[in-house]
Image 1 (cartoon, rainbow, N blue to C red):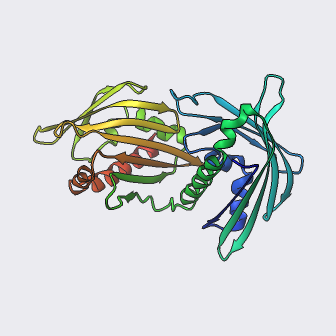
Image 2 (spheres, one colour; image 1 turned 90 degrees about the vertical axis):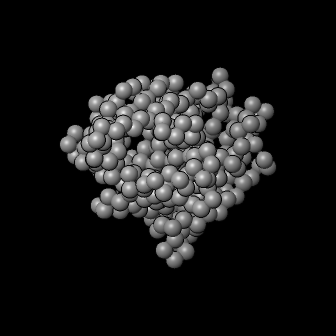
Length: 315
């Protein structure tokens, strides 16, 4: 990468909100960093001379399963038009910076939308920071994509409690999203506690029994549903990632159709006491995906999330 980077994106939100999204630590923690990273620590003091401290953490079991601290300083805070801040992403054992950047963000009104221009200037870099420098453009692009995704969550109509289901033609995935009037920890518990699963999982006319549910990487789960005639339907899978209370990754397989496992990636994003749950189901083929949709997947998902809301009210 060169010593400078400029990215311009337009976001469907007012300028005042977009400025807040860059200065409110609760919001910044939701989108800062490349797509696979979370930010368990995000401390911002958005005043001239104010400090920045963010700790990123990658997926468990990956090469980035460790804390990656970043420090910085705000130099200019002109709400809602302009931000200037410096960041130090890597420090050596003596505390000397290996990668330091000066970042300028401008916010321009475009009707009801906001055009954001980010300019990154590299103040200092050493060979130790070569990898981070090469990935800087991709990292910032992914961060801004996460910021755009955050807007959909913040703007969601939580009062209507609607389940959104997206299944684009020709793709192998279904994405189900819903906003719950509950904190992240409570929602995560509701989907990982074996004692709570029978109270919301699947349609009401079926009784669900949890035979196994070992919620840890490599752990196995198996649920059995039974209808009023005594017919049984079993489902099982394996947990691949369990990161409370923000992310679950596991396989899902209906034993009536063996060999057609689905990969489920479930994320939980909290803002002001409400949590947006996104469940991405990735099928082996487009045909498998379309067949599941025709079998009643959409109505089942809506009923399950409705029941989950009822359960959260009780607990």
